[in-house]
Length: 200
Image 1 (tube, helix red, strand yellow):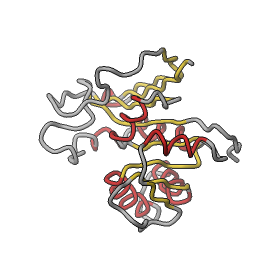
Image 2 (spheres, one colour):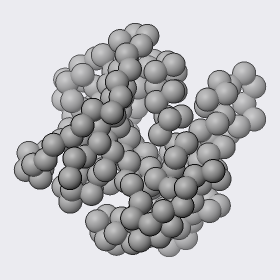
Image 3 (cartoon, rainbow, N blue to C red):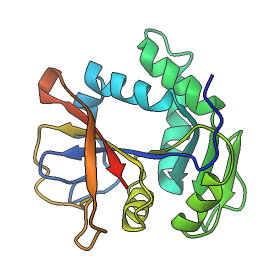
Image 4 (cartoon, rainbow, N blue to C red):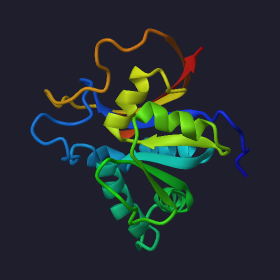
């Protein structure tokens, strides 16, 4: 049972290429480069560990459509890895907050649409009771939270390839600060997961 606490921890998770990009230069929605590495033990165990203490998923609209369109189908998928099923079940049962200025209603259960700046939305969520607030691969949301110094735990999976261009997660001008390495795991195909906590 996740402990219910106020001033909740904000945890962000995203995959990066070795040269620091979260998407390629030609099509930011093309995540085919991730797929050979997403099915590794490192990537699956990483995601499982992040969702266990979390009770809320925070997503941007585009990622919500991708995640919530795909993951619920995994629950009944024949031969699915139990960790994938576990994450899918967690996502279905978790409270979901989707940041969007274009959606007026949520097509998914247990989902709230919020049309306000990311930093304001996270302040509101921190004031409620619950476990971790897990931001799932929504780069625009994560970048806004980093810029506002609102990330408590930064989780990355790093895949051993160069994309050669495309958007970067870490822009110049971010608030200065120190981070503590909480965990690091390397595995098959050179995939690595790292988790850092913000030192305040």
